[in-house]
Image 1: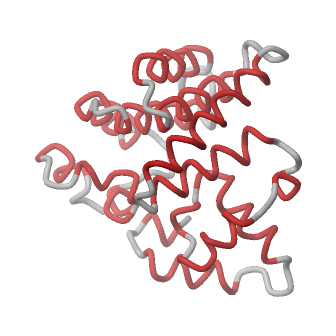
Image 2 (image 1 turned 180 degrees about the horizontal axis):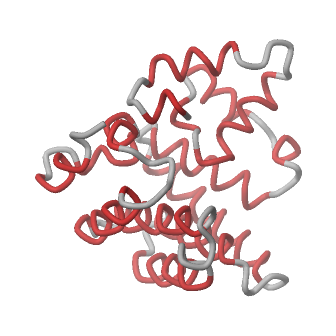
Image 3 (image 1 turned 45 degrees about the vertical axis):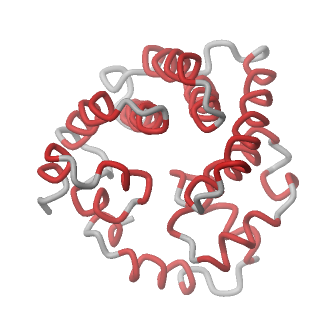
Amino acid sequence: MVELGTGNLSEARRITKTAAPGMDPDALVAYFATYWDLGWVLDDADQQRALALGVETFDGDRGNWAIVRAQLYGWRADSARMRAWGDTAAKEFTAQLKDTPDDAQRHSFRGLALAYAGRKAEAIAEGERGLALLPPERDALTGPYQLHLLARIYLLVGEQEKALDLLEQMLSRPYYLSPGWLRVDPTFASLKGNPRFERLSAGR
């Protein structure tokens, strides 16, 4: 995370190969692909390994397994599989929310899944609901992540200015996102060339 914060993707990738000697490689790539949505940090071989994993490697959570696949296919520019797995993930999170209707993160993940599936209005509504349930003012650790998820939703559905509004908020408060991170995270590639984004990503 520190190397990504400085914009050093190559060193971050090297660390993923050496940080946990002897660890099950399937468990390692599943961890990176799941927590803080770091699947894009994995190299091509490890992304392919993650895509070959079954749901059991993700603790049997079909929603989590499906959204990881949607994200990886999105970063790999496979739009057909991205949409298909986004749709699958949305269905799984819908089912999970029947038991936990006020789970902010699941609402946001459902919004992200809907965005990958191309369902703009529903995606935005779910992402905004997730943020309303757990704003940064209520939770300084998880709340900014809700902002982050909503920014990603806005980007996926073509609302760049709204995404930039949230990026400005995230960079102004304690959170792991940084200008260096913005420069290397492919999630934000569509913003390159936008003057606001270039200003935000120019610092350290």
